[in-house]
Length: 290
Image 1: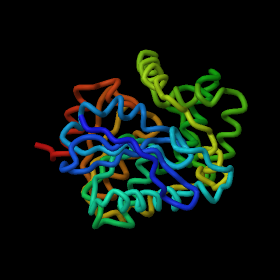
Image 2: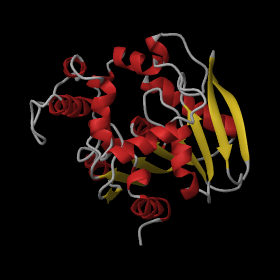
Image 3: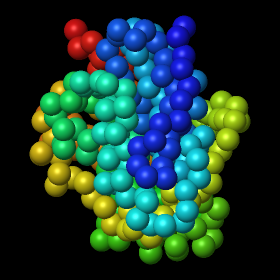
Image 4: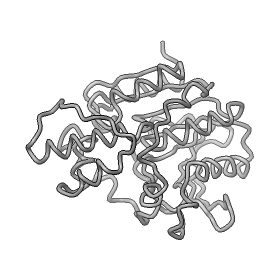
């Protein structure tokens, strides 16, 4: 299979790591990983076999993964900056249009790019996207209470205007990874398989993007009002056991008018938990539901 690895300059002093795979003449799909500050490595490991009919672009977003580290300057890490990188990348590749596949935080970038440039967006595939960060903060806070044994599953937490304070309280008592794991993984097996896969990442990258986005007020961002401005064919794939996006992300399909695929028994990485159901859902998203 064709594979080209490159570092693409997308802004002054900013390069991003890119793996360009598959037939050059095939429809292009840009894969946007979660984070902020993650890597496309685990997504390629999990998704590659399902995307063999496409030219697939695996991007490590600025400052994350295998992309070069950047200074700790909040201005370098904004939604505007990351979306601008996508415009520069498409121009560099000479593509008239592409499909965007976003996972978690990457779903937010995919939506914002499509909102700004519907003519160059052939479609959106959003896998367990994160768009309402105050809601996510409330979910994390509730999970931290459950881990401390002082709340039952299903308890409601008042939705904050700014989730940062809730997270400070949550992470003061419970290690952040344990709290996120509580939401993302429906089983110990699921978590261990993902971590085994992620261990292959050659460079994990710094946590600068995540910290800078916090300083920029990420946990105040609720993207819901902008969804009505997205006018491209969309599919939302949700794991029914991913408490970081379900059921909130159903709103995306409702407001965008997109196709919703609910994958029963799956968490944040549905190709791990329910590979056959995920394969069918992704096929429906890419080729149209029967």
